[in-house]
Length: 195
Length: 195
Length: 122
Length: 122
Ligand SMILES: Nc1ncnc2c1ncn2[C@@H]1O[C@H](COP(=O)(O)OP(=O)(O)O)[C@@H](O)[C@H]1O
Ligand SMILES: Nc1ncnc2c1ncn2[C@@H]1O[C@H](COP(=O)(O)OP(=O)(O)O)[C@@H](O)[C@H]1O
Ligand SMILES: [Mg+2]
Ligand SMILES: [Mg+2]
Ligand SMILES: [Mg+2]
Ligand SMILES: [Mg+2]
Image 1 (spheres, chains in turn red, orange, cyan, blue):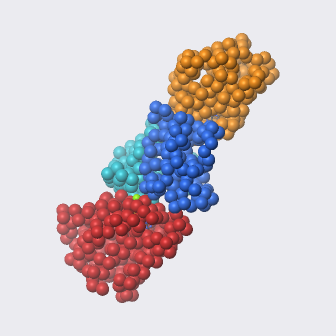
Image 2 (cartoon, chains in turn blue, orange, yellow, green):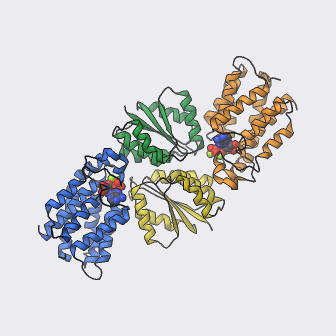
Image 3 (tube, chains in turn red, cyan, yellow, green):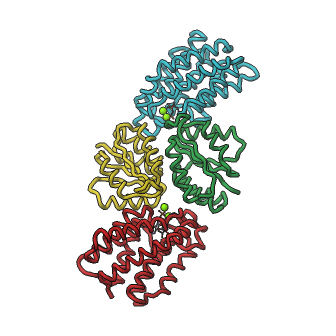
């Protein structure tokens, strides 16, 4: 399946709304194993996305993902900025010619995060949500349970990338904040494509 | 031979005067292979020594060296502060009970610099003046030529301690600023004890 | 070849302070900084990095950063710019000081880099 | 055991900036700084270090410095104080960040030190 412009816009708008609503949840998760700003960072990015859409309605998928990327890159201010930014920028480039299967779109974003973060699955980052979701989409098994499982899998991991990695063993027992914000992204997607 | 209070005070006062007069010479030497402030640093130390003597006339050798040490430690602001400071502090401690032979006094100061700087001769520092002077004093051969030779020996050395060491090979061909200020110290000593 | 120095830090004060420190030993170099977020909070800003790169008058730029997002934003910039920028995964303050001192006296890049190697910690 | 953090830098801005940066990740630690000379110029001040040690409320202090005279003044202070201070010859910003993050969650000293070991560059 593919996602078209109208739904894709609903997807991002729902994500933006969740980021604003869950600002303090994300800050709390980041306080435990980071510097406590992931909610504040993503909320800044969210508002910048809204501003950008208000200023200029994206006319196609490439523009929609690109505007999302730029807002994140310019306004987030933390590691999640270049990471979400690269994901959406790579997605924008990928749909320029032709829309992609949703599974391939999300895999493209995942690969962007891996490249930017020099990271992979199992490092207790947002990748541990993105990668399982793109697998699930490939196998037509994308649902809330997959999101929950992916998010929860980060809890017992020892972080090896990002600020939480400074804590080594002590990073265990906490959800990764970027995994949580990514879970919001995919919950929004699920709402839009119906799950 | 030993140096007694009146002469020791003349010695330090003459040193202070030279530091003030040669502020820009020392800054220039430090500009070539350091951060350009050795003259400014030592001038600040010099003025603090004068202030201290004005405020309280040192009543014995231990107090004289200690007041000199404290002024240097508190006001120099560069590496030369703790280095000269430690030299004079160790000299102050050494003369507390009984005055020392001049050669032993200067060796005590030299050892203090080596300890504080974790350094030794041949590293293109002030030690390359202090150590040869204490040798010369031991052998009763202390004169202007010894000072000049010691100072000039630093010219072709490659620095391995202090800021100049960052320049490696490029530190060659310049006199070490701290060796120059130490040369002033021993020229003052020579004036006082007569050479 | 005149090298410029670029400092990217999460903190506006660290970035400015490193510039103060290394300028003393390297008064002739172009040293530009990007510290903190757009609002001068702790974090990083691609726009500030872009500006610091634009303002740098070095023929090539030696770049130093502190943590995670400073690095990632610097790498985004590297993909966007035409300028020749060398990024070093070394201790920020100590690495920038070493490089600036050597660049000031026109040390060749390969010698600067061999002096930076022991400072690699990232 | 609550550890305090002491930052000694040639630059008042670097010292303050490192405190800003690490306070975010370690809001509960006592972090005190000595930056620059008595007149807030580039350099170091034993008096400022003394003050920063006095003001630090940690049971033991983990100390970080940048260059030459910061180190020597810190060592003079070590000879003068009764407080238990551990000095680390590591990258200033990165070392202080690592130690603060771990000290915040009450990591034992030996584990903090094993994490600092790869950052030793001095
Ligand atoms: N190298 C990396 N690769 C992938 N994800 C990362 C990496 N570094 C950090 N992250 C993600 O970013 C999140 C933190 O984002 P944020 O708090 O906004 O940035 P910062 O750590 O700069 O404050 C982490 O929870 C993690 O999911
Ligand atoms: N580790 C050391 N051991 C001995 N002498 C040193 C050492 N480091 C620096 N010096 C001396 O200090 C002098 C520089 O003093 P100064 O310019 O006042 O300090 P800074 O380098 O902090 O600016 C050098 O020329 C050298 O003689
Ligand atoms: Mg964070
Ligand atoms: Mg942050
Ligand atoms: Mg100097
Ligand atoms: Mg100096």
